[in-house]
Length: 203
Image 1: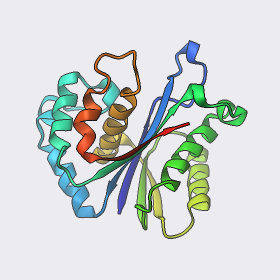
Image 2: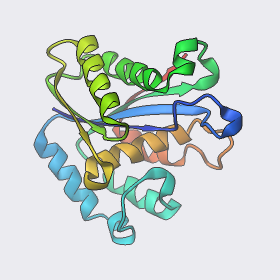
Image 3: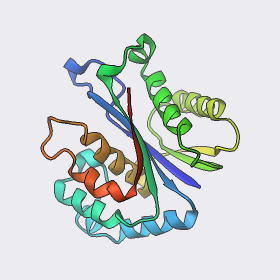
């Protein structure tokens, strides 16, 4: 099993200075390596790839590219599970003060409440953050989730990994659907709907 994780938004709470009101994390789950390879090939051969040669990042892609991308992956063999955090519901002083703990807590929660889907999963996470943060996150996830769920955890630069980019596009579409200040905010989540297994709106 292969699982690719990325996030949308940031863990900061200074909303008046530009921090995002929404934080979301999502995991794209493939049952087999073959399913992952099929999906990667479909993206590489899609109309979205023909009109967009750079990295697929939801917040930097045009509406046209997003439409083409989600049309291409509608029937691909993967499922998406996500957690969405509206920051105004967070009251924990520690989570509000420590960005690394905030990220760790919600990614850990997403993996922990997986409805029993994850088994011996190879987890691939967007490789942002410094080395100490990655090591601490690796240790925390393994300690919390125990054996049988995670086989290994890897960090990869999204620029070089198409399936980490897929996770970015998926979590971006889900996060945007919670932004009432954006026009047609649910547009790309509706296109992704056939692949969505669960979205947990954290309270």
